[in-house]
Length: 117
Image 1 (cartoon, helix red, strand yellow):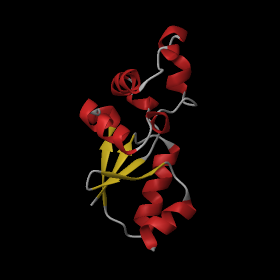
Image 2 (image 1 turned 135 degrees about the vertical axis):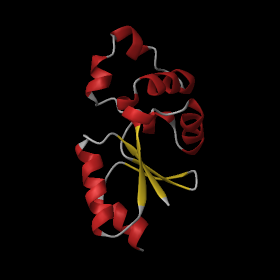
Image 3 (image 1 turned 90 degrees about the vertical axis):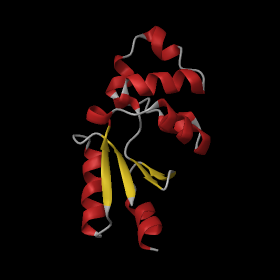
């Protein structure tokens, strides 16, 4: 079973739900807003991809951080701390299966290759 991580009001997450449902791909949803995210999960993800790939520096949450705080995000340890505290700063969606990140974000062509091949 796939796990889709994100927040429900995110347009990209909504597109992902629509695409997965249209193609009858079962998934569960992990809502960062209500369920949070553990530092262990973030550490596991950082072992699979660089922390920079998980951190959304284009998000409103990133822009709202103090200059001092945003400038402090220079390594994985600090990035994990910030992502655990400000979950809306994590790129979304992140789709995982059996503890492995399958894809970050929404790209219909990529989804077709990953889920329909």
